[in-house]
Image (cartoon, rainbow, N blue to C red):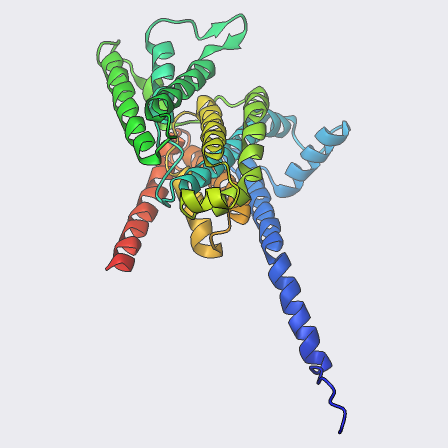
Length: 365
């Protein structure tokens, strides 16, 4: 009886199969690298453009001199160094942090509530932060106490308090039903919004500071703001990204997730706490900027799938680049004036939101 041997695939076919597997495994990381490069390009564009344009070569020379402690090249005006280091780069850094934080928090809420139309303001953090900021701006409370700016602190405390109230209302001995949490968040948002409106009606006629904050702006950004925001954003976003695998499992029913070993209630609490902390920290330094936490994660999901191990970090990069470019448009489109950045994100995000709604309607019908 003749001995049978297994036929091996031709060498080129085997090599092609191996290459395709490697590309399939590593391709998401190449996308993340591309997203990082896109964010860097957006940051350099935003830093170089404005009422005074700074050439890219001069921008790189100034950055190299600042990083190494060397003197700036003699052909670079000192005013460019001041504009870049003290005005534009703090704005770019804070916009990137806020955009990334809102996008990752939005992606976490979308995964937790299993709804791609959820955003980080879903359970009341925006209205609470708005009320906290309005109390400081309209009640005569000092804006600075002991050298500490009170506006970000009040906005942060208001956002945390609103979500804590909604969570306490929804929490029961059987757990935390997400539908009840959303309804509680809507009620808390309505209450905080009505108090904010009442304060605005009974205040002095000049409401421009409040309106400017409610629409979002980076006009007063400083390096210290980015450092303070990063202190809260870094741990909260790290917790969210660390829970990416659990978010994937939680796309099943809660019963199935529990059968697979997920402590569902603990995971809910961690995700809500981390996403709320990130959102409150972001809006406390920028004001209420809409659509970033909705557009960025949903765009990533439409283009590159539903794995939250990839959606979360990529959403952060997309959200950061989006808000950096939106801030560039806000400060240049009506130069020498400036638009609130929330207006720009609304002009971009509202059509995208309508497109998503129509796409979902067509898929249902």
